[in-house]
Amino acid sequence: MKNKMSGARFIAEALKGYGITHVFFMEAVLRQTLVEMETLGIRRVLAHSEKAAAYMADGYARTRRSAAVCLSQSVGAANLAAGLQDAYLGLSPVIAITGRRPPIALYRHAYQEIDHIPLFRAVTKFQASVETVEQLPFLLRQAFREATSGAPGPVHLDVTDHIGRILEKAEVEMDVIAEKPFAHYPSSRPLPEDKLIQDAVELIQKTTRPVIVAGGGVITSEAGAEVVELAEELSIPVATSLNGKGTILENHPLSLGVVGTYSRWCANRVVSEADLVLFIGSHTGDQVTNEWKVPRIGTPVIQVDIDPTELGRSYPNAVGLMGDAKVTLRRMIEYLDPEQAKVEWARYAGKIVQDWKKELEPLRNSEVIPIRPERLCRELTDFLPANSLLVADTGFAGIWTGTMIYLTYPGQRYIRAAGSLGWGFPAALGVKCAAPDRPVVCFTGDGGFWYHLSEMETAVRCGIKTVTVVNNNSSLAQGSRGVQLAYGERPGNREELFKFREVNFARIAEEMGCLGIQVERPEEIAAALKTALAADRASVVEVITHHDFRAPDPWAPV
Image (cartoon, rainbow, N blue to C red; front, side, top):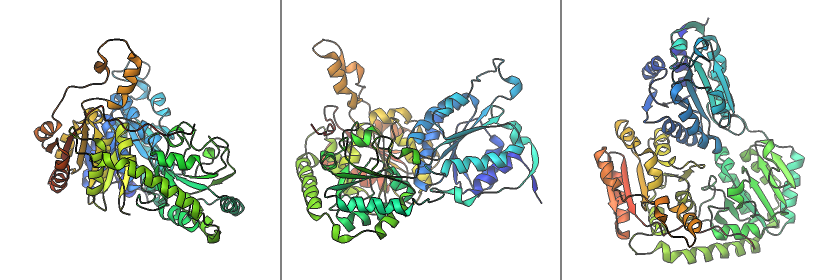
């Protein structure tokens, strides 16, 4: 017998059934549903903007490997859609629920109303309009299916009434059914045809200089152990995308580091010299390939991806394997012949990595003031606890953390912005909600921190204890070189295009209830990080650097 309940109660119970522990929202939307959530133990995290709520949900989803939920009323839908860009690019299953005016109000200049469908089309896998309470059971289940199936991604449900009261108040007989396979991702693990797997293994064993490039799909599939086992069986060097960082420990002899544009030159060089590249869970986009120059065009490629439309998208595949990374690699390992190991190639690649590290060491140990970011990265490498989550913003923050902070413990994880500056800090709050017992450290610059520093109040109010490291060079440093080139020899106020006023973020953090520490000398970094992690509240460690300290440009073959 079906239970009669309100729409508000149904939504709350359905989310509880799928294991949702937190929702992230901006007032005012689904108020009665939020009340019902409290009775079920779901935490309601009120943000200061819709974009921040979306970023929090994104961080939560990537950490739990499950769907996450964010909410906004009709007038905030455009902001929420903008916040889904990173989830879409990062393949993160965020379910966005917005209100909209009922049909009688449409096309009549209803206050604050615009068409939501075009806004979300570019940043979601699936979207639907929920007109009646009877649609809720079907469309909520479909939202979770779409979000977690295949390559994960955001979805959008647009409910009638700008704050959702019509659906909330309606009562109907409904069963709450939460489909457990879609409460997490991957929701299924397809396996390629066995003949194709054998073909791929045979091709790998015939080559002399193969390289693995592990993308974000490896992290999504939790296939890191399989990547390392495959690499060790045949002595194959392993590079990663930024999203794939952490697949292989960075003190492993086969680790090359991050490849592409936000990269180490050693990784780019080794991949460019490969005679076969095995892309695993990678979109093979411009960032991981340095504008499709690494590997060189014409290099044979094997590609493993759960989405068949990705196979051969940028590089024609010698063999394309449509399947989940973990089970596909496990089957490949069964066919390996360890006598085909590429020992000399691995030794050569390792020497190139050591040359890169040796070249970098003077900067990692620099005592100069203002502090060099390379020194900050070395201190963070030494500091990060074995079970910590490192959350990185985009731009230089992505380059510094991706290339110069070494993850050397199996329990460490790296989660980075897929392209949206300002994502890092609010996303880290979502990460901490998903992993309350693990240390969460966010690395951002002052340019990124300015976007959502109001969420420090959210962190304090909601008891979300993160450590935020702000690389403060009082500028958008990544753009400074482009500004200089644009000016050329012409006179003018160049700094007006990328420079900010000097601001004490530590003092602002204290005013908002966080612990704030400003660091001006290299020898102070370690103690500041230790104090911040031990604090009983969210902490901000502001490290004073300079905009002249630039991340290295990516290496490319001539």
